[in-house]
Image (cartoon, rainbow, N blue to C red; front, side):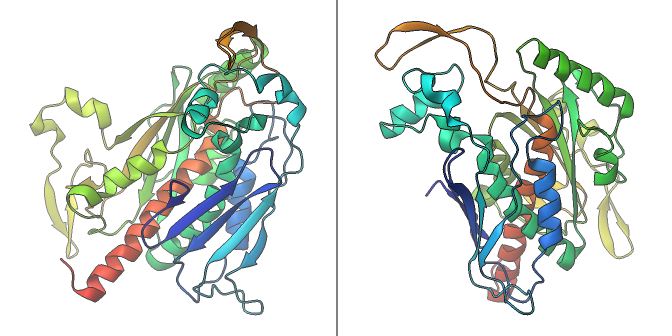
Length: 366
C-alpha cells in the first residue's frame, strides 16, 4: 500500500536502486490527452545523475520504455493504466559488498531490517533516491495535464545550501530557464556561485551538505482541497516529506509566521475583474486547507546526504562495534537534483485534487 500515492490520479512505483530497473504505473489519467514525451524527457534529464561535479557520477540514461496506456497511432492517453519502466544500466553493486552486515549511520539500513526482517544492501534498495525517477516521470505527466487544463506553472529552485541563501526571488516571474542557468539550480547568480563552492568543498573533504528547495505553483484555481483530513496543504506536506532526505516542510510564511502578529500575517481580500484576490500571500495560496486562487508557495528542507567518505562508527547485525568508510558514487548535495523531484510531487498532488474537485462537482458534493 505504501508504494501507491493519490486518490483519483494514482501512482504506483516499483523497483530498487541496483535491481533490473524501476517503473511506474499511473492509473486515473483522463483519456484523450497527448502523451507528453518531451516534457517527461526534460524533467528526467534534470533529475538524472552524472550532470557535473555537484552530483553523483553514476551514468543512467533514464529513457523510459512505455508499455501501456497510450494509443499506438494517435499518441493519446487511453484512460487505462499507463506503465513506464527504466532500466538500470550503471549500477555497481560491488561497492556495497562490505555493507550487507552493518548499518550505515542515518541510512535506512537498520529500520528497513527492523520492519521487514531483511533488506537490499546494494544501493539502499527502495530507500535510494534512484526510486524518484519513477515519480518524476509521473509528475511530468501530471504537470502536463495541469498546464493544458488550467495553465498552471510549477517552478522550484534551490533557495539555500549550507547556510548560503538566495536573495529574494520574484515568485511570479521566476522560470525554469532562469533556475537552470546555474548548475546548482539557484536563480540568484551570486548565491549560486557560493553554493557551488560550498558543495565542491564538502565533496573534496569527503563530506556532504543540505539546504532548502522553494517552489511555487501559479494559476491554481480556488476551491481545490477538502476540509479537515483532506486539506491540500496536508497532502502537499505528506507528498514532499515522502521524498528521500527531507526534514521539514513549510507553506506560505511557514515557521516565520510564528514571529508575526495576526495583523501582519492576515491576507486582506479585494475584488478584481470578478474574482476575489488577496493583497498579500502570507497564507501561501491555501486557507482552511483549500486553494484560494493565489500562487501556492512552499519550501522543503533536505538534510545532508547520509553517505560521507569519512570514517564512521557503527555496529554490525550481530551488534559488534566497527568503523567503516563509505566508497562508491554519491551526491555531495541532493539539492540540485531535488528540484524536479519537488516539482513532480507538487504536480501529482495538484493533479489528484483537480480530478477530485471535478468529480465532486459532477456528483454535487459540497
